[in-house]
Length: 370
Image (cartoon, rainbow, N blue to C red; front, side, top):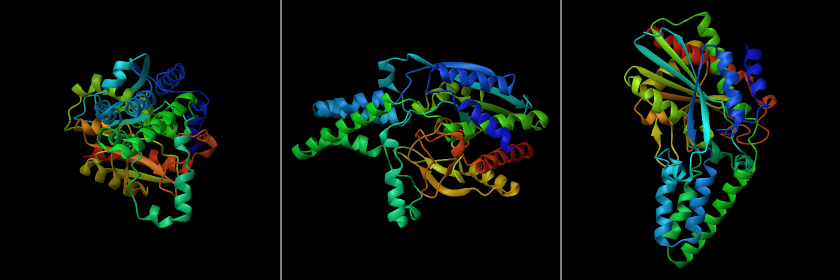
């Protein structure tokens, strides 16, 4: 099975796949053909978070208090999966391609949506793992005692807030920090997309392999939707297109979402919650079902971790669906090679990917047996 998973990752990693690009479409077409009988669904997107965040930070850096206050509100909207009012003003010039396939019983009373994403992130200096590794090496207790990721988006909003609300010195500092944010965002914009083997071709590989298993042994009493979304790296633009098209036909009390994202680091992890500003807890009952499925399948899953970034899982979670997200972490409680050019197939921990596949299949079994 490791070879099957590895083959998917190695087939797609050479394709440059920034959100909404021709490469993302090529990857979607490959996945759709590999799944068999899949639908390709398109959704207009802006195509990047770096531009709206960078422009808003620049406005706060040079503007007055009122402009900075407006930037704060719109930054929160952009970062926390809001209405995307500002990026919509900038225009939707790209198209995300989602892949949707179906297995199991189409008339079943319950539906499980297994999600991944096939686009890849652009790199940038802000993603360098050096600072966290330095802290973990020199102050290991800081990492050991903290199961919630650092709030990387807080300084961005805090800097604009200083300009809006601070005194003269604080405003001056806020302007400098806002300018720094704008430069970091511009740095992301000038970089190419990374290979994205861990983030998130590992999730795609799990999706493809699970589809093969469910074709050979269809679950009873369960409909399974396999969704590989585009434009996750733009803060969930692609999966929101899926939501607009499909949530109205998916009952909230009988539809479950399992999100598989970056499962190629050493330790498979079930997130308890995530959110850049407000920590949103994943569905307790469904988390326990996933953990129980892992125990029965002999898969150890780390618990109690919470993320301060966002994955596609936040979209169904905020819509009221029972949702769980699988990720993986290294000894520093971070994702290996996150948004970095070293995110290549040779650096993927295939054992963890296999565990994620085993767990996803076990979750199918748990739901089909209920």
